[in-house]
Image: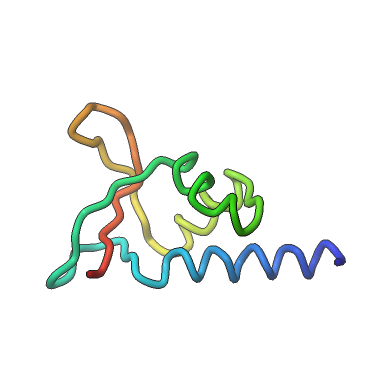
Length: 81
């Protein structure tokens, strides 16, 4: 597989991961803050996606960092239920 094809496949994996997640709360959504590394771990079974690609995707789709209840910085994510 060529690099461009791999990049397109990584984007498809990111799109699938975020299909039921949003950067802002909606009716019935549940806050599920995640670090870049946690997101990377979640997708590892499908495909290796770099932290840089995840960060690029998150910023392109208007996700923002937030301070979680334990004091760590994570991405603010709302999962649609």
